[in-house]
Amino acid sequence: MPVWKNSLMTTAFLDETSAFEAEECVVRIEGDVIEISYDDEGGNVIYRGQNDSSGHFELICPERSGRATLHMFKDGKFLDGYWIEGGYKGFWRIELRK
Image (cartoon, rainbow, N blue to C red; front, side, top):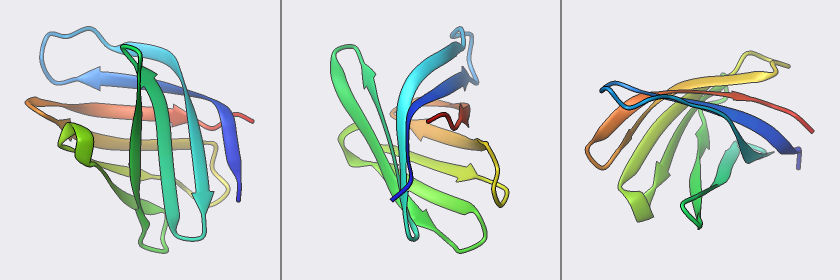
């Protein structure tokens, strides 16, 4: 299972909230399953989802009523996507780093 323990996540919001840049996260991909985990205000947040076999992932985070998409080119170093969590919406980019 590939694990990128030092990945960096940039999160942009669709409202006036300032973007979060270079936040650390862990990315795990095993078969068609992806998991993104990161710390937020002392708690661990986990998004999990499936690959549709083309590099497009759909993820959920039930604990936060979160849904997201991520897209990655074959052998790419970045994941890009859209997210909805509670009443917030935005975009995110994750740089895969070992």
